[in-house]
Image 1 (cartoon, one colour):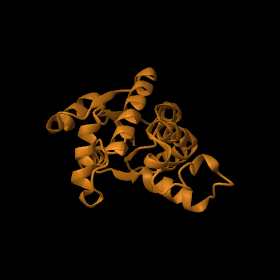
Image 2 (image 1 turned 60 degrees about the horizontal axis):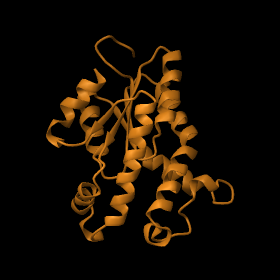
Image 3 (image 1 turned 135 degrees about the vertical axis):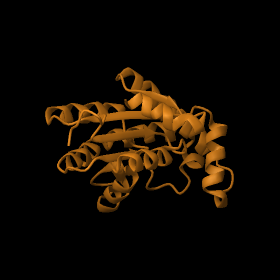
Image 4 (image 1 turned 30 degrees about the vertical axis):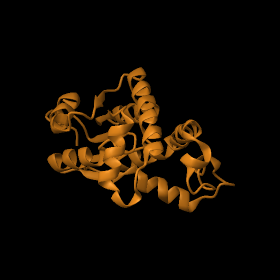
Length: 201
């Protein structure tokens, strides 16, 4: 699958909720003819197949209908990070499966950690395959709140959720930079495709 004119065989797009990962993934996958994996679907499947007793790291929010209100933004952020880290092995499993076939893939989701992305890239290089990762960033909760309002108009204002997402985005961006991975601000949105292409070239 590896060829000199393509920068990746598997592409990971990480970032917090509401920053535009799905749109970016769809654009890049269409341009490359790649298969798209929404890691949130994998997370949902794992949570359905496990219990808080057997896999507590995957079920931090199971007992809460409204975690932001019940736990507070700071605690929700801590648990979101813990959940992401608990899913590192699952991400590696997805990547290994995608590397076993000769079809490029884009994997996107909230729970992709930079640490897991670096491990996945090392494994891919060991198979003479190219895995790239990029993290999209939006640190302004007002902007994320606007995205939620556009995407989920029936849910009303989600200001606390947006605050958590912006804080999580800042954590991901700091972790990505510490691991030497590219971080792209989502705005301006109209130039994001070109900036992504440049970052991945």
